[in-house]
Image (cartoon, rainbow, N blue to C red):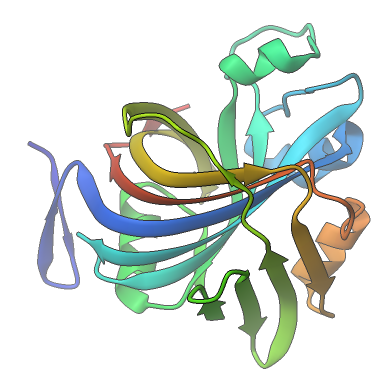
Length: 238
């Protein structure tokens, strides 16, 4: 069984998350602009419609996990599996094989930062992440070096029925010149989904500028809120 030594603690794979709240919004963006943003990874975006890619903004409160409790914000893009050929198919069917490339992933705790970078190559960095999840509206405010990056507000939608079956997920990361594939699973409960449902205010940080160049803020395609348990297994080459 694989393990890693992080700050004097042994972390055994797979890493388990027992309880987390996950809030996300998916945005249709220009595929050429998204390709330019993630060109360094060697991956290609999945086009859900001709010329359109998906950028997902997500914030997570990890209440109980092998990497302790912490807050996280993420910017990710749906991408085609490596080696899927040169033809850029477009359409909803591309979602079945798409993975999520994690472009930016600030966290608010040092242990998960080191673990995420060392074990999987996640592009974690420290930031101030304020989460307000107790009210009907879910809010996340991210600042770094005293500068506002994003202020995001989600309005949960209607409940989605169904058992909390394990859903396999594929994440891709890139750090220190290496692109990796991270297999994961998620057990969701209390899921709510709605079209639109997100308000975004961008600050003056370079990441905010990058998001504005993708066309944000704009109407979200869909927002999702849920409680989840997860596992993250050993990363391999993409």
